[in-house]
Image (cartoon, rainbow, N blue to C red; front, side, top):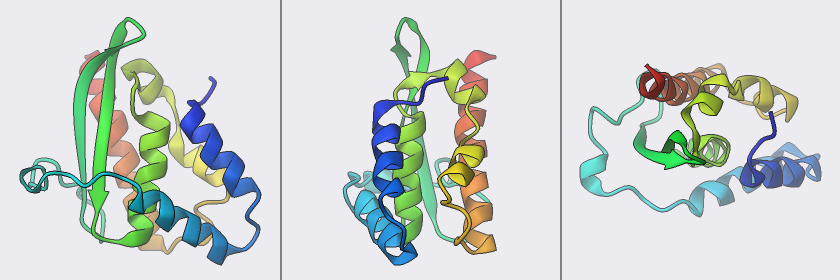
Length: 142
């Protein structure tokens, strides 16, 4: 399955960055570019459980390429995690629900080498975000 262009662009940019500090800086920049959620969207129903940092994900159902799809928005109170949110949004947002449910972001993050320098807690939080997004997609398909 072909990945969306925004995710491909991020993957390509990461491939040019060998140093982990540069990769962290790039993730932070991606996160800083995300629009903030409205204060009322930072609520318990949008909060992702399993993250040490606070993370909120908002899923909005939409028709994408003639199929039920999802558009995601998100935010975190931690810079690196906000960058991980940005990468996940590039991968999952504005896609048909079936593609979201079938796309294993963790495997893609491993291919990009994005998890090897994350703490166990951040890696667990990443898995929680992915599970939440794929779960939203499965709910749309049900």
